[in-house]
Image (cartoon, rainbow over all chains, first blue to last red):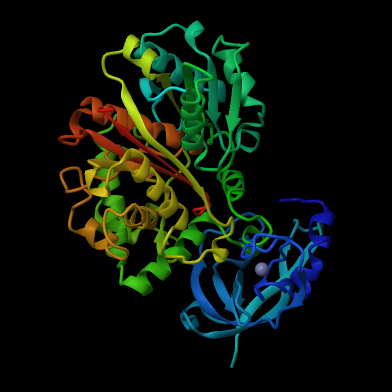
Length: 133
Length: 388
Ligand SMILES: [Zn+2]
């Protein structure tokens, strides 16, 4: 999966710093960013919003048959996390054993290498989550 | 405007690893069979819709609308490719239905095709993951089995659905597929085999997942007037409904209720003026075994949370109260993604004509077909019936 550099570069604020958006009209928060509020179904009052990176596990699985580029990480835990501010996101849970994962457990983001384009390609970083003590 | 739209001919290839046939061979073979079945000539065809998810990645071929029209000997007619991931076939059927319904065309072809085995399995998985959100799911290491595993987990926690119940879906699909000569996986499997097969994404194992399959399917649609003139046994499309949901699974209102199916089903039942209990059988999108449980609940064949039990009690088997996937479904028959929605329509037509052989559902007069794209972002439903 060798994609152009720009595909990652333009998403860096979101992937590195959890910058989503916030609708001033209905107060809904969105991650990833939205240009049109799906709740109000219109534009006009969207502004950037930085998420705390704290949340809890909503659902999870252990990926045993990984996609291309993730072979060296498998098996890994993939989860849907409910963020403290409301939105849900998909991410890996790292630094723990799959047996330690439970729905409802508190997690927080860590900044990690996500995928590398082969041995000489670019390395893409982003958020993953770890269990909170 | 045509008041009714009927299916007057059907044709499909065997589903499987068809090494000897190219992309274009598959769809042309299916089309020729459908034209023969309808007893029409090529020059009576007014237009064509071809459902195909990813010929570019699977066969390095785009612009398949013109390609298929050309190799069908029909260059000149309007031809349109339709893409809605795994629901491409079902949405192509809907576009063909609308073309006839509007009065624009009298006789229209709806085909579906995918040639998936010419690329390595890893590349096929990349192509399929295009049905999800590349930036916020695939980039995080999500695969389609893992997205359905996330749904299965919630269903198990919220409703107490068991892995035995989920596995029973696969057992039943293979039982039915063993009666279907066109099925890719026409062999039976036991509950133990399913539950001990290799883990793909916990709790889903390899025998809970549909495979990589080549195949094509074609149906011929006609206006009420033409259908009556041309054949004795048209099967009428009583409703066509399409709904969407968020592209990423994590943005859905619920992981255990498939909203797009609920929305499409509501419209389909209303338009067909029937209730769920009037449906004699259904072909549903069991790309993963949990998906069939999600489908039968959202289609209101049982309450939310009861799908696992309904399956375990045998109510969805061929001789049960509401037979689901008599063809063997995506799991048993195979899932050449673009072809699936059309193949579902073909099974419904054969059942309603009473020509489904050993897997014939008794008293099959009204059937529902349910085709899903991605993890549920597209759902297209049609209701077919022998009576207008
Ligand atoms: Zn808003």
